[in-house]
Image 1 (cartoon, one colour):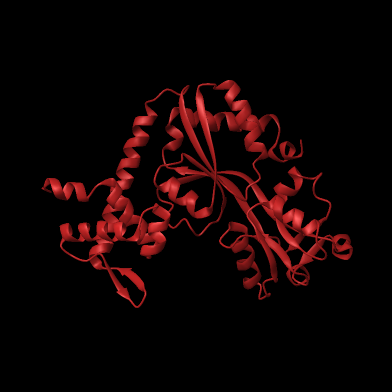
Image 2 (tube, one colour):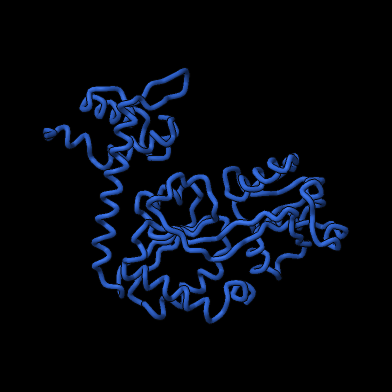
Length: 317
């Protein structure tokens, strides 16, 4: 039995600090992401080490690694978080389907037009259910859904940031394809562009670590083609499109869904790459989330919404 002081050390805040440090393996980066000072983080870890009676991390040069004790505590911490999340879901499953909040995290690169239109309609049918819509990076999405801070993620798959699918489900929305955005009439008339043809000019692209940036790099390297020279990076597809269309001989790769939804804005040529680079846009959520009445209602209304008019047609409207 832990005494009172030990129980204070093993608070949810302390375990969250430890969990974040285990992900980042950097005191500086972790302190910044948590919004605390590095000495405060170090002090908290030392308190935990004092209670367990063993160091949790060891260092080699400037890098830190988990000790055996740290690995055991990390496994236990994740089990604790899973128990809390499961209990929370069970409680929510008993709540009314006509009230409460649904928190949705959307990958920043996703075209949100159809989802925004759906939320308007969903609100008309379920006016007492609040919807929180949050734009997030890949890592933020995974952290938020893992820690039960969002109910549903809207993201592209496959995504190697998700290591363990045991506790999660996915619901496919559409297949999406990367289009080469360019001003080369010869490529446009041919109707497709090889990776080598796509790299003859410099590119504007998403920021480092964004899903499509990593996907393009992976596909090009797997095809033994040099990654294109990057001259500008942006967080928004609108920014990328504007840069390409107001520059000379700059290419970009943008999702087909974005190009369809913004057909009036896209003045450049759009051509499919060969081989095609495709991903599934999906809803991702913790197992049993779809048993919570309001979330079950959300998915039922979503299916009905697309039965009336397809996702692609709604992108065009």
